Image (cartoon, rainbow, N blue to C red; front, side, top):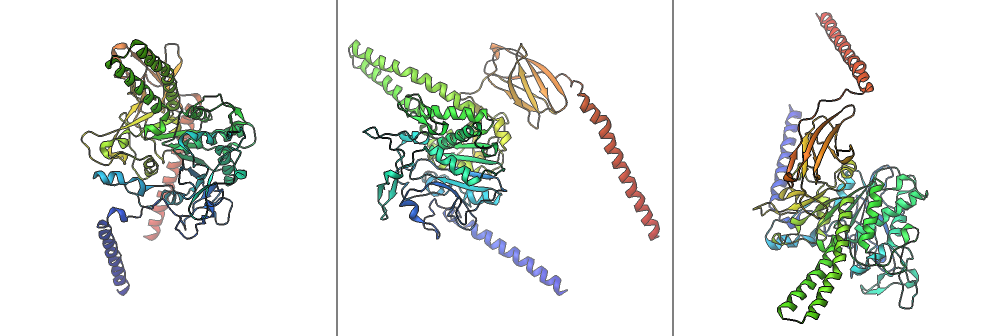
Length: 582
């Protein structure tokens, strides 16, 4: 009796304590939730000597402190039997000599929403901690001192062929703190003479070890997006040279608002991470990104990308459009002011000279859009919501691991941190555009408060969509009149599949699963342009293969026979026990 009473008292106490905590949390302001700031310099265990001399490398997060430990040092938290995620930051102009960030930047990016009266977004633990709890090794590649460069010096990621006014190769310069918090140029004799991509690649090899055989992935923000592309391309190059195994290639590369610029390389620059391959003078760094993305995709490594600010992840486009807009305005003003024909002709020629650049970025945009799956966060960037900061996209990406699945306007599940590598790989070339939900005033930071529509690489709505239902199949292929496969689509659990931007003509749709195929026909005409075209009913399954038939004939009856025998034996034993008891 006393034991039961004590048990009831204990249960009541636990329920009461839980209720009190819940009520207390409900009345706490959002700012007091357990979201961390970006600094950890004030945390015990932080060694600020990393700012007084050149320090870069891979650091591992642990569970007992927000201060990560450098790979290879005592206390570094790395388990070779766990999967790994490695994050890297971007440009750190005017702060690299005295600041290192955690993964998230909540306190610095939430103010825009609060200022506009919208609910702030919130998370309750630093993302590295959540990932550790999920069983990952979590690393951060710091190159903050080397990242203290201007936005048009992103070629440091790719090459160390950098010269002073006298033509001397000076390598990568860096800044340090003089011990009093003041910025000063580091010792030139310590300047690295390898690109940041090479430095990152070496840190990965040393941090993981040659015998590491777990899945691992890279995540890069801003200029760090360029860095993970170049670094992965470097690892592919080493793999093809036979110096590292397949185990040291990432399974997935994620780009968070990657900075892709129209910075032009100069004569004499070489790609350090590609064995010193010469870069044609005038190449945009964004074109180097596209080259790397295509090499990575060709190696069947998954790439997902999340773009927020056009002036960041499509900087190459934004800059040229600004120049073209200015040239068009000058012509318009000259005509209104009645300028002479010679002046107007000169201005028109200036505009004409810019047009090849527009063609160049259009081709580049298609390459970049088709080599990865992209989520274009236009609603999050909309000024009516208070605007978006470049760093907020970090939080957007990592917060997707908390959220339920969301789909686009065709039922396709959106990419997220939790998406499997195979799924991200299957989305290559997909572009999802985030749009404001009509009449909504909810915070667009969360995916469920906005809508996502399918677009092409240039963010134009996709037309001539062919769709149908093939429940029971896993793959649908679109074949042209010559029998050539022109598109392939996975079939959803509900049977849906889609082909996009299908040209006019007659097609066959072929369906496949493990042991059967079927087909249907569809025609696309000019009159259907811009519409969704439904496929007719599928032709019945073809005869299963001989192996599949044999399995069905022999294995399935055998399994049923075994089940029947087990049931009979169990029943017999039960009857026997019943008689004995009687």
